[in-house]
Image (cartoon, rainbow, N blue to C red; front, side):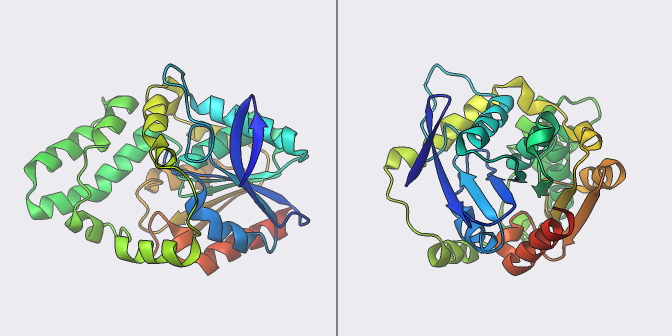
Length: 299
């Protein structure tokens, strides 16, 4: 396993296509998921580009967070820039999945000279709008099944007066039962586990590493900048931007997609029909092609 010291923290990273250009840095979601499940897709992209992927500070194989420490969204963005410098990479393309899409957007806005383009993979750009997208997608299912408690919860989240933090916290209580998963086209665990078993090597790590995501998420959810609305940043980025959105994705809903189409300079929206949140798993060949074509045409 490869590690790099960033601000005194050991960060686990993987590298594919070292001698190719341009460089893409993968920012995983979760929050706290790690780059493990993206390893196969990183290898596929590595046949065309130079790919860097890593476990964010506090996650899985990277150094754990101290119990009395704090963590913010902008801390993770800053560590990404410090990693670029440490690796000696002049500039790169942040590719963020889900929560990683928030990091990619902030990074591209904050470090334009380090950014060649930005790719957002079913991103979460706003805790409030993601919570509303999930509520709007699941509410019809709860109405069909007559689940009064969940209907009430979804409607509370959709109220105009609710704060981003309250909406997001309430959205964590939405039940992803079998009816909802089927209604919202969420992938089944059996297929996903089969993919993992076939394509992802088992990491030789301690049990403690597997559990680090819980502390990571808790620290992040306590940070005010996690609940900010970052959608307005899209209009301030003067580099090519690609949004990959699964047709049934609940993280990046219709509101976010419309905002991107209307405000992202040099923006390109690619909708993967039949996919939900994990497009790189559900349609891996098409997903790879979309990214490679975008890079070839614009970089």
